View 1 (cartoon, helix red, strand yellow):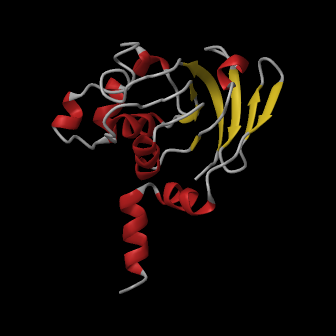
View 2 (cartoon, helix red, strand yellow; view 1 turned 120 degrees about the horizontal axis):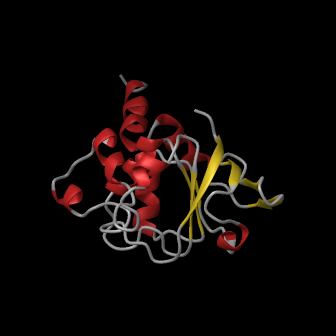
Length: 171
């Protein structure tokens, strides 16, 4: 897995709900878990054309409480389905766990990051070290990366592949 993402910034503000803004609620109710289906509906509540605009390596930069509401995993699987990274000022606890479970590279607790970017800026983020670079504005920030144990789960591809890997060593 490559922990360094380089691509376009997609800036979103505070208080985006996991259901409705990030992903339509119907996919949680239907228990849809296929990243290839979910990716086509990512961020449809705020920008219906978002799935057609993004490219692998692009980075969502969000404000406070990204993914608030009921902690459903579908929105994070949609992000992974596109090969995007996530940098947020804050993510509620349940959504934080689901981002890990989905295998999403992300940085959390990035206070003021929204002041350093605009949609369209070229970014480079090292999710392993926490280094954040806005190449368009020549801004570099250092944020706290996730704990190594959490990165291991993401490295494995999320919760289910991580569990399978651990169980294979027991047999």
